[in-house]
Amino acid sequence: MRTKIYKINSDAVDLGRIREAAEIIRNGGLVAFPTETVYGLGADAQNPDASRKIYAAKGRPSDNPLIVHISRFADLRRIAEEVPGEAERLADAFWPGPLTMIVKKNAAVPCETTGGLDTVAVRMPKHPIALALIRESGRLIAAPSANTSGRPSPTLAAHVAADLEGRIPMILDGGEVGIGIESTIIDLTEEIPVILRPGYITEAMLKKAVGTVRTDPGILSADSGIRPKAPGMRYRHYAPKAELVVVDGEREAVIQRINDLTERMQAHGKRVGIIGTDETAAAYRGDVIRSIGSREDEEAIAKHLYRILREFDEDQADIIYSESFATPRMGQAIMNRLLKAAGHQVLSV
Ligand code: AMP
Ligand code: MG
Image 1 (spheres, rainbow, N blue to C red):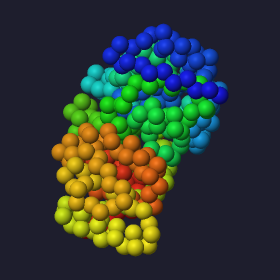
Image 2: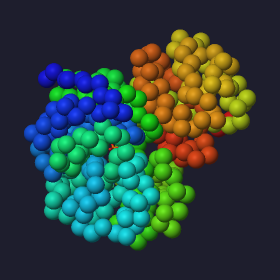
Image 3: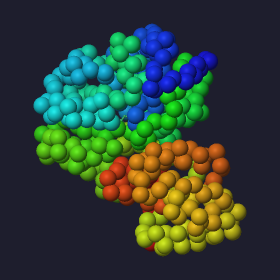
């Protein structure tokens, strides 16, 4: 299959191209499109065959449910068995935006879309191209991240093409995404709302909107033995091809340890990659050194993480050492992704 790749200006969305994409969605096909978090791989959420195509294109396990993207709050009522009061307050505060809510589903949502669960994940994205595509299609769009399962989520259309070109009919290229890590997921089907995946919207922000909120203990610690509630959080994910090790501690000690490890690995003929920051990159002696951005700018760190993991694949690094990025606001979300990419290999110095 030939993949059409259309560049679309997010500030002046070309509706002609969007209508062509919307037609594919209505006919049960797949379209990759930008959202403010990462690129999504969209299909008609109420068409079981279309949902199945998403799983096939990504190689995604069929028990890992999809997020349904909507463009109006009223659409939540069309697919939810009941809309809890918290959903209205959270939508007022954060929709359109990077927050996914889990609610009980009704019969309008096929099991193929929810991985067999009786709940459904719903989000109203903020990106103008995503919103235009949902509106023009007249459908609700089921969309996971537009990467091959297990690879880092795409933050550029080129990442989508690298994974899916030839397997899907269309990619809408809206340039680099704004946030760069996936939406925060909050489960509203329990007594107290539970965060199933950390993201740009933090626990503190959610508490302000709805009062008590807790975080799924399954995502807090790798060795707790507690299974994360979101099926997708159980898989090894975002993994670069090389082994990745996070080195955590005071700045000077981390630099020292990474340089020692690098020397040892290079002596064994290994090619070493290093993920540092603008403040530290010059101090390293690896074969390929990449700065994720300034340590003072956590939004840049979140936005660059997946691109940098992908770039190391092209460099054929054998092992990658990364600094730790437990930044003040988004640190939990960033470290959740980085530690998963590292298979939870952490050296504390
Ligand atoms: P992705 O769109 O690729 O970021 O993946 C969607 C994430 O949402 C995965 O981690 C899923 O397991 C999670 N998810 C989707 N629907 C549900 C649901 N009904 N209950 C719990 N987690 C869900
Ligand atoms: Mg994903």
